Image (cartoon, rainbow, N blue to C red; front, side, top):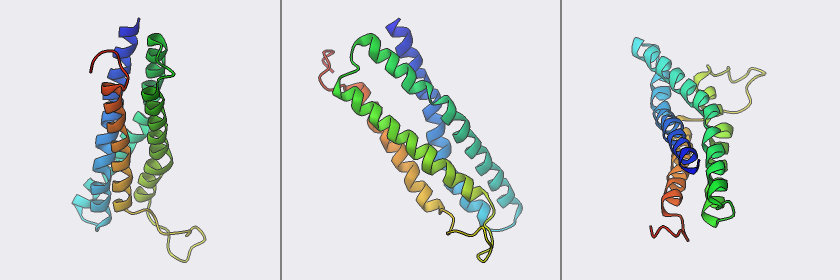
Length: 160
C-alpha cells in the first residue's frame, strides 16, 4: 500500500505542480506582451496569458492531492513527526499560500483592463508583471526545496 500511495503522491506532484510552475513562469511574459498595444500579436498574447491563468487556477485545485497523498504516505511509513516531513509540509503550505493569495490574484488583475485613475473602483496600481515574476520564482524555489527534502530526508535510514 505504501508503494501505491508514494507513486500517486509523486505522480501528482509531477503532473500537477509541474504545469503550475511552467504556466506561472510563462504568464508574466505574455501579460506584458498583451499590455503593450493593440496589435494582432497582442491579442494572441492576451489569449495565451488567459490560458496560462486557467491552467494555474485549475491545477491549483488538483494540487490538493499532492499533500493529501504525501501525508497518507508519511503515515504509512510512520514518519509524520520527522523534522524533514514537517518542514516539507510547512513549505508546501507556504507555496500554496503564495499561489492562492498572491500569484492567482495578480494574474487575474493583470488580465483585467485597468480602471480609469479617477473612478470609484480605482484603489491602487495593479500588480506588475515583474512582481509576479518574483512571486513565481519564490513559488518555484519553495517547491525545489521540498523536492530536495523529499530526496535527502535528513535522518533517513536509507543511507542517502
